[in-house]
Amino acid sequence: MPLIHFFDITQASGITSIIKVVMMLRELQIPPQPNWPFKFNPKFPPLATSNVKISTKISTLRASLKGDKRIKMLVNSFDASVSSTRGAWEQSSYLA
Image (tube, rainbow, N blue to C red; front, side, top):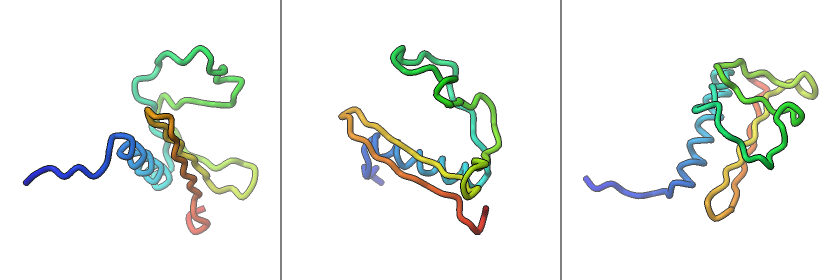
């Protein structure tokens, strides 16, 4: 049976990100970042002052203590031609 090509690598990356978000919401866990540590772009601001944390081990996914107490996640996927696709997910009130 021939292999049918439906997506390019950028679309596959976006779909993979969506699957990862759904699994994180289902399991309430953040997986570790693969291949960490790695070099950052020197123009990127320091993580500590940006309130950004990179998971180095499996961590519990929790909602912010502010607001409605639901987990909210944003996926931003860039491709080589500098186009961008974004998606936002929110934990269902049924599960919160």
